[in-house]
Image (cartoon, rainbow, N blue to C red; front, top):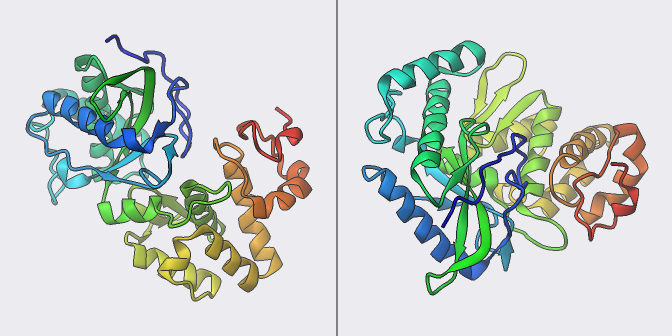
Length: 320
């Protein structure tokens, strides 16, 4: 089988298709596809223990737009930050050269983050060169993730003609990855990313940045303020004077309901404005419960609706 994708895009948004030619995958095809995908990686990296956690909505719906996987950072470096170059067949001189380049241009990143980025970029290049079946987005690799495309397989181990799926390998602390991609409700037009991006918007309104793989930090000082789900919950409760539980934070509908009931109009609108701007660059619909707000504020916020699905109630408002 020839390689499926060789022309790659550079813009990455959660829930989006970075390759442009992949298809959604049926629930029953996920396990056989991941089995083949893992086997292919194992051929290239026999020393690596590929223990993936499925993240977000994978396997929870009849179909998934892509497959998000979590892989613990300890497979890439030791606790003291020493990169496991030998396990990943990475040339030390190439690694050091790329690491220095990344370190100089990413001064806000920690040493460990820069080392991991260098490793992921080199791993993506190696996979692209050595696998006939896995294609990687070379320009986007390194920011804590490796974006791949891979053929889909059915339960009999047969490749589905002309069907590939996007598989994203997200590297970090698994507890944090499971939390940052989690959602316990998938109904109406709401997907897992809607809960995560709403939470991200709440942090942004507090002057904080949320990273899917590493945690939350203060935008002004660069100080890390949360690296665990409990710490993230505490930051939000303190910042908004709320008493959210972890279950509420994990559920888009319960979280939105709590914000509407307990925040001032100004606080809520600040979060919604940020949220809608984020969703405007994401391949996802606008949740039904805030579509009226989207319509009323489209012009003020400069919302274009470019990536709305064809069946969205808001398609007639598209401006680009």
